[in-house]
Amino acid sequence: MSHPSLGLPPTDMTAGNPDAARRLAASAERVSARALEIAVAADPTMRERHGEVGLQKLLRDGGVFVEVLSRSLASSDPRFVREWADQVAPVYRRGRVPMDDLIGLAEGLRLATKSVLAPGERGPVDEALDEAVIVFRKYRRIAGDARRRNRILQFIYKGA
Image: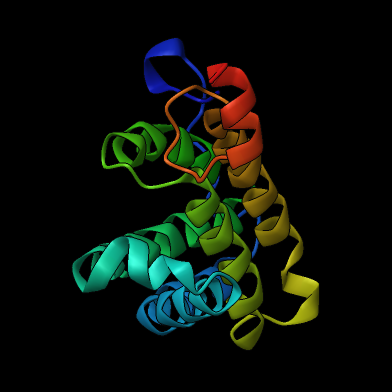
């Protein structure tokens, strides 16, 4: 990990594709809106679970997700997205947002970025989104995730 106090050089933000990253950052609002539409279409219960205010918060955070994704694209380093996902997952868990919804938002971003990026520019984006999904799945396994449980297994574990 590059850190100035460790004597390591800063991350080279021109190592990847900075032009594609600028295009992606410029269209962050449109891409995040489309990603949320894709996620809600894949799981229509999101609209009922979160309500209008919750969806607006997901839309706002989707814009930040796109900006971090563009940073990963510019540097060709998925570390930016992985660290961001690791930082926001506890906040979402505290807000009782299921990690499956964040995974759906990441998969929606995978599809929504196709309108901005050429097929040859998508490699670092897919790699970074895969890293984010891995982090969200890690947090999903921790007890207390807000996802719906299997009623039969819940009945068996309760012993009732």
